[in-house]
Length: 417
Image (tube, rainbow, N blue to C red; front, side, top):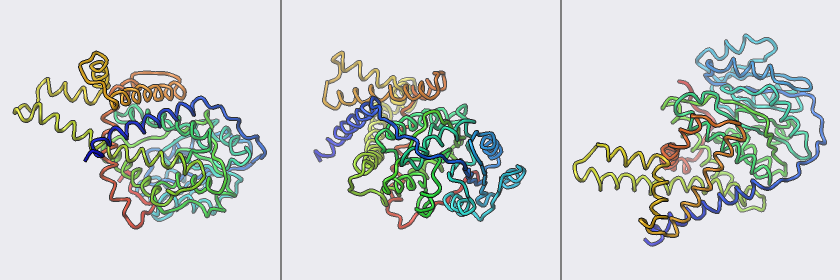
């Protein structure tokens, strides 16, 4: 019983150590490997399932993308039931393959059998890339032993309500990938834009269909072969995220299922940096969300029933204030002030909690300034009300735990249906 009472303290302390490790990585300035290759051909694969809304923009961004050499584009319509195939087929010089709905990995692998370039780029059908993105990322994979590269991911439709939060999340994730890449510990080459050396991908047998997180799976397998994954800080891809409840929940449950499948298949004791740092870190992040999700949800619900519902008060200004403080940064500020003023007891968990939070927010701000190079209202609102978004992710992670015990998981999903 004592262990469960101390669990939030243990989790919070490990979280503090995790945040401190990010700051250490932030100040590391490693020397990049020399460029020892010259690649002159690339095949860009655009897997798409029901992307009639965005596929034209994705194709046009790839057509306009700069590349010093021969560029080939293959769109794979993965069993769409909308106008994706018809729209893609209008572009001259773009090869369009049509398959039964068999998932993203199968779609990419189908295109790989037609690809002839030195390099392979994967661009999601709902994303577009900057004109110079391919050129910049090619420079990365021309470095010694660097067989794949990724860059910055932004949310293109961040004007949509929930996408404001997702945009901040994507900027933060991009920062994490840039930090991890300094010690060759990045295990994610995300779908909006990633570039690979074709030879090494083919030697692995292409992308795995076992699980939704094919971008993590392929990266882990490459690293375990002794290769490095590069990060191009000036290569930008913008992706359109689901903004309705149905689409968002589908995406997030798929993400959660995917990472659980990665833990199941790839967690192991080994001497590589990803086994000592990255995978345990990802696992801790998931478990932290599950454990703290339970504790925090209990605190909110019990607090509401204790102070309001038990007294037959269900909604008034005090109830509104209660939830406002829980769901905004105001609650943290008020709590911190009460500790420093002596109103609330200064405990170990309080100190660690305050320090962890104070160290976390600068990383979000740093990611925003570094990659967006500006700060506006659409940055401020999600930062001010970040907790509800985190709590929603925590709940999804909790609900998806049974997926870990599923015998098999295949890379097939529903989208825009």
